[in-house]
Image (cartoon, rainbow, N blue to C red):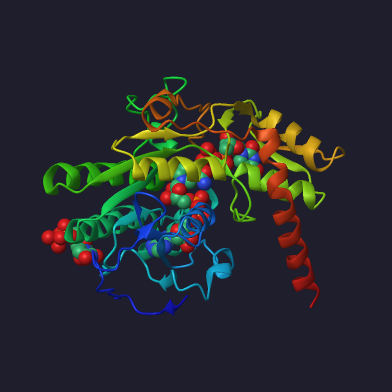
Length: 355
Ligand code: NAD
Ligand code: UDP
Ligand code: UDP
């Protein structure tokens, strides 16, 4: 594994370097943008495990080297510190495009800071990453004939007027709200993806990912599962926003990774909803966290944020039928699988503070 601090890396072995792996499958050269992040790093683990060559592109905005460090020294793994807003030259077969400042706290902070301190460059960064980053990766895919997969989001449905949401639903999104840099950013990314498919014949795939949790999630990124789990471990009250009756559907990360790979390697463009249809109110989620981590955990109500979707649940019939995929891990089984990772990181943080 090499950390390359340049923005231009070429590997001149397209075609020639491909060797058979297993029966009937070629060894792929795969780029994962955002591969040092939560979902990306789990995807990288599975790609490496099946024998692919993997290049991670990440600027470490929310990702961490620790998430992929266990691959350092493996000749099939390469890590490039690079911002996808800038062009890059590579030669690969597949591009998984995950790079995006994904957490609500991060994108709202970006907005607040830029509003108060007039840092316009930062204000642009979330939307800009979605637009410029996706454009560059599509340009790359076009030049080298690679297949491109966009990780879009259930946020494209906004505060949905259809429930559960099917891929045919066009969404209910506030184009100028505080979340719009994210949801409109992803909607634009979907548009660009279909534009390059129709106009330049790029092979594309679109996944609409619903709320996903698991080990390596950012500790303090403000998402509800990471907040509740970290709060319960730290013996702080779990912060329920609004009346806690809003719903989400929570998917364990290994199910998502299976879905992303089935989509990339399958024949269908999508978009495909990838999520677990098990729907919970935030109060119910707090109950599950309590059962799993600490029966004495308490909750505390806080004002909700603007434009918070009232409910969200995927209709996954399309993915079931065409990708032969469905999630296997229910919330009560998945949640315990992230607790050790969270405990260890919180412990390390506390030790760090003591030094
Ligand atoms: P994450 O924040 O852990 O990962 C995103 C990664 O992208 C990080 O490693 C970050 O450093 C990197 N990144 C951000 N901006 C970049 C840039 N300009 N150039 C290069 N790298 C950059 O988030 P995640 O949960 O792993 O999300 C991965 C993808 O899945 C995102 O596109 C996100 O929108 C999508 N998604 C995730 C969820 C979820 O619940 N986790 C839900 C819907 C969609
Ligand atoms: N691009 C890139 N790597 C490549 C090819 C293109 O980063 O290997 C970028 C390129 O710099 C441009 C974007 O992708 O900003 C779109 O490329 P395309 O060729 O589609 O558009 P054009 O350059 O013609 O505007
Ligand atoms: N939420 C909450 N407490 C928290 C963080 C979030 O009650 O500490 C709520 C939030 O208002 C939203 C839901 O949990 O209704 C999911 O929020 P998250 O940011 O995880 O995901 P998204 O809104 O993007 O689906």
